[in-house]
Image (cartoon, rainbow, N blue to C red; front, side, top):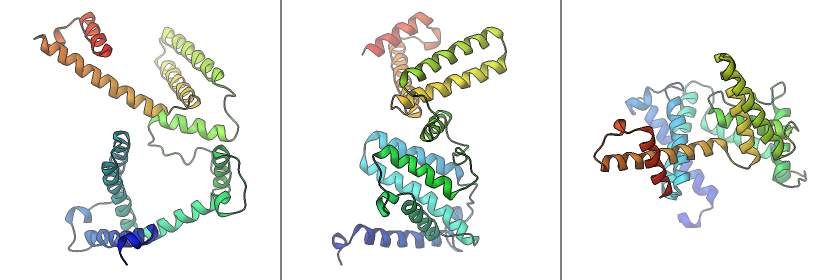
Amino acid sequence: MKDDEKSAGERAAEAFAELTEIIAKLRAPGGCPWDREQTHESLKPFIVEESYEVMDAIDAGKPADLKEELGDLLLQIMLQAEISREEGEFDVADVVTGLSQKMVNRHPHVFGDTRIDGANEVLVNWEKIKKKEKEGRGLFDGLPSHLPGLLKAARMGEKAGRVGFDWPELASVREKVREELEELDEAVASGDRTAVEHELGDLLFSVAQWGRHLGQFPEEAIRACCTRFANRFKGVEGLVRDSGREIADCTLQELEDAWQEVKNR
């Protein structure tokens, strides 16, 4: 049968089986020395790095790059699963089977008789089903400890909102941000560094919730802001360099003027 005559499932099954054998060979005696010496712990940085590279590819809007980066991320998953197989814990088939079962169980409106009204109800049902599957776990227990702060704050607010603990409207969140800003000002005036850290955290948490209610991902917003700042400052550096000066020799006002010129462009 030609590739274009096969179903997506058939093509995926064949490709996945081939990849599984390749990973096993890389880790087997006589395989790749680097792959063979890796552990769950040593691969942790690569999982994070590859995840961010996937995000960069999505932002770039280039399908070819996204395909490649998804492959690199999948490699990390395959290596982790192969290490566990070697240790007699589970293999990649167990990972896939577990995921399939989870998707079926948590989508009773697709694979069962449950009726839902819109995407928001899907998320509410998801949390209810998840709670039944993992009795005794708190609402936030599943959130990774290594999540970036703003992302974690938004996800916590989102999860709390699904069980009814949330501000009723946008204006209430905005008022909370104003309140936390005032409390930060008071902490700064007191000179208490511990209080400043506490109130700054409260302010950032509230801003993350404000972004969530605005329909914006705060982590994405701050990343985009950092990119804009870097690009504009690069323009400032270019203006200063073209004038024959060093940026360290410029006054704050001169840098501000250059910044505004770049920004207006």
